Figure (tube, rainbow, N blue to C red):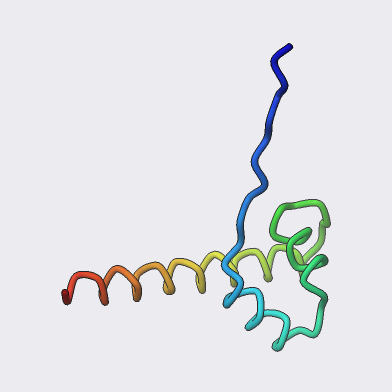
Length: 68
C-alpha cells in the first residue's frame, strides 16, 4: 500500500511578488507559467525572468552567509 507522494515545488515568494507587481498576473497564473502548464511567448519570458531573479536572490543570500 505504498502511496506515490509527490512534493509540491516551492517558489520564491519574493520573486513571485516582483513578477506580480510588474505584469499584474495572479500568483496562481504565474506559478502555472513557471511550471509549464501554460504555453506562449509570455510564458517563456516570465519563466526566464523568474529563474534569473531567483538565482540572483540565492546568490545574495549565499553572499550574506559567507560574511559571517
